[in-house]
Image 1: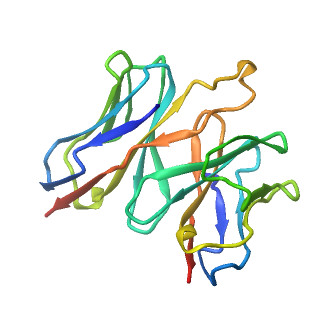
Image 2: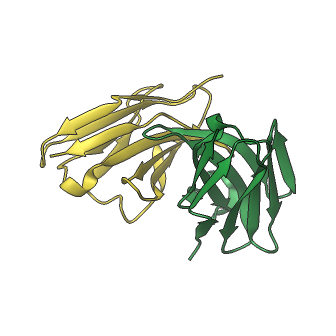
Length: 110
Length: 119
């Protein structure tokens, strides 16, 4: 079965540094999403992306965050200046009416 | 505000039991509802998807039902096994607010039910 691939699986970064989380969605999907899950909390929506633009974003997705589809296969989430509270598992998803999720990137900000 | 709630928060059962996990949601105008499984520190595995026009979906020992009018879904697991131990998440996609269907709305998740099946 096709799957969403995320890299890296775990990233440790210092506060204030920029990080880029990468995702390869399923090839024929048109809708892409980023979610995050802080340890012990609900999975939260960050942003959705369609037709090379953001279609919806949550209040979490502030100016520190950006998304990009730099080529035909990759979908990235950039955090410009990481904070301790950005530590979480970040999930990429793609799909149409059904969400297919990657295995996540665990981001630890120290 | 559109919210999803799951009860119980945790459930521990002996192997072989049939069990029911509950999910409730505000606002009955859903587009679809999806049940996921999450193993500790891992990603989300989709188990079942129920469209708003459907009443239930089945996959193996799993059966999910949907009652939009009461804002509820249940996940029934038959003959539970230790390998079923995981967190089960319910997620709802409400009808996109804009016309034309150019984008599917986000999923809103419940907090999950932690299931432990002991031998």
